Length: 116
Image (tube, rainbow, N blue to C red; front, top):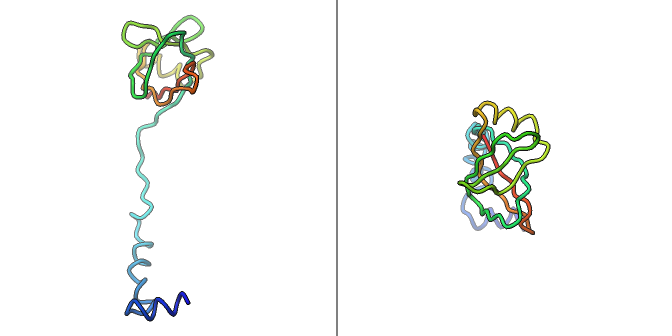
C-alpha cells in the first residue's frame, strides 16, 4: 500500500519526489557542527537556608582546601575537593571565577553551576 499510495496520490513518481531530499542529505550544512565556547559543570553543596534559582550568577573563590560560592555578599555554598579544571579557572581569574546556576537539586541542598 505504501508505494502504490505515494505513486497514485502525489502525482510524481517516488524517485522524482525524493531527488531534492537526496541532494539536501549530501550538502554539508545538514549536520553542520557549530563549535561553542567550552563550559565546565560542577556540583556545589548549598549552605542551610541558602536560596539560589536557575540562571543566578555566583562567584567561586579560592579557600584553603575548598572553594566558597557566593551570591552577592552572601555565601551560598562550597565546593569540596575541586577538580583541576575549576582550580585552573580560578587561578586564571586571579582567585575568582563567575559561575551560572543551571540546576538546583530536588531537596535544595545541591546545585550545579557552569563556569568558563
